[in-house]
Image (tube, rainbow, N blue to C red):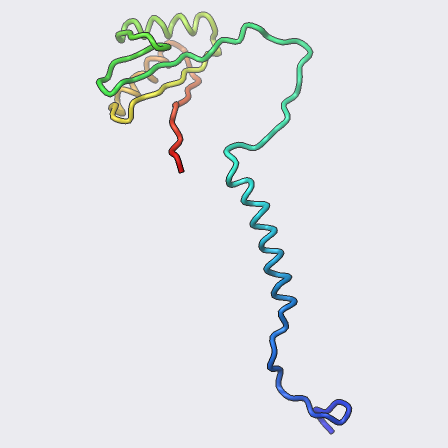
Length: 137
């Protein structure tokens, strides 16, 4: 008797075995949960090495603000272009490893921001950062 088992004939499989599908869905859920923690966090957590000595002469970065009118503020104080060049020169003389943070009004012209970075490069400052505000989500 072909197709029989114990005297009963086998019919077509009419039910779906849910166990393998549930296993696959759970594995995909775990992968998504693990990868979502890296997507949501803005930075990876790292443990920095500790030094026996501490350098107390860490300078704060130089901050240049460009207003929508195109005027400059150096660390919160209004300066003209010549004054800005002098301040950048002094900052580099005090610390050749100085970081320049540029923050600009969103209505400020792109060319003015590039000009500030160019002035800093001419004075020897090579490390830059652009200050932004994160959008509320």
